[in-house]
Image (cartoon, rainbow, N blue to C red; front, side, top):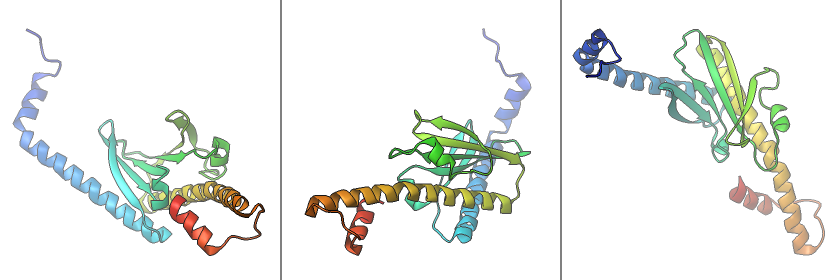
Length: 196
């Protein structure tokens, strides 16, 4: 007969307290969700834009994700990782490198003055930035998330406008054989609806 790898005291404690542990788990989920919603409201007030959120977990610890509606297509977001270490505040920023953008271009916009740890995810599809500080208060967390969301938004805009101009120039050149001096509002709106 195989001996359990967990000592008998731990087994007795868990079996005796299953109901309370279940209630604690429910409370944890509720508190984390309310905290996430609260942070979203504060960030939205700070940047005067709608913020989308979603939660996941890494190694059983909560991962609070924040993104702007325009960034959802790119899957770029800010992660506040509640790692269980009460002495640190950890962030992960994911910037989608698409449409020919390289990491140097992203590094010029995202966290450029903070010297974060940098890496890649998904086969160099995402530039990831890791930032860790001693415990931050709520105001500092909201400020950090807000600044990073605006940086990702600026990165996305920097990516989109060259593509927009290229597409519009090609479209206009095909239409009449020459490049226009300006685009009509209808052309801009049509492109924005289809591509942004």
